[in-house]
Image (cartoon, rainbow, N blue to C red; front, side):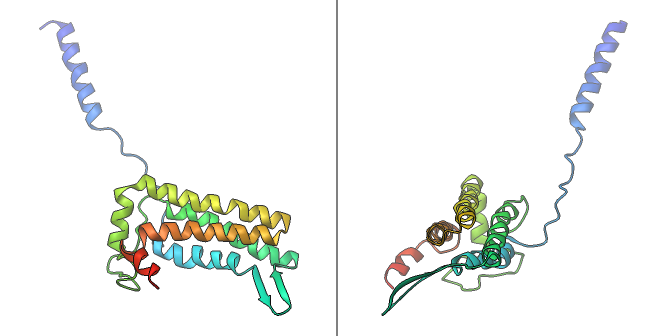
Length: 186
């Protein structure tokens, strides 16, 4: 054989070998410990309640009173809750974080979906899941604005919007399909 033919065969063989042995992508530097359910119960829910419980409209025979954080420390507590809530959205989006761990079941069967069902809904349309989590992230923005302005009315409005975002996600990923109708009858 001619040297050119050998060179062509050798280079073609090397290309085939190189394309078959591409390096593996680097392992993720993240080491998640908690499930999505854990993050929701230990970070999202308690921090949302800090925000919701920081304001109240009290109506009695003397009229209406808006109770809001009074001191800088009070406002800082709400701000810290908002920071943790917003950062928790990044945690639930981490690839590979399960909804729950094997063997875990719904805390309230029939009222909420089983973890495998929730995981299937997320896996079915991950883009919609990401959009929903980003809506939660975005809902915290007006809370920060209200804290910065020390505006109790704005904080109450932002807390209401946060509740709507949370409930919309629950309607899609937590409650059974027929649950909204069951709730309307109550």
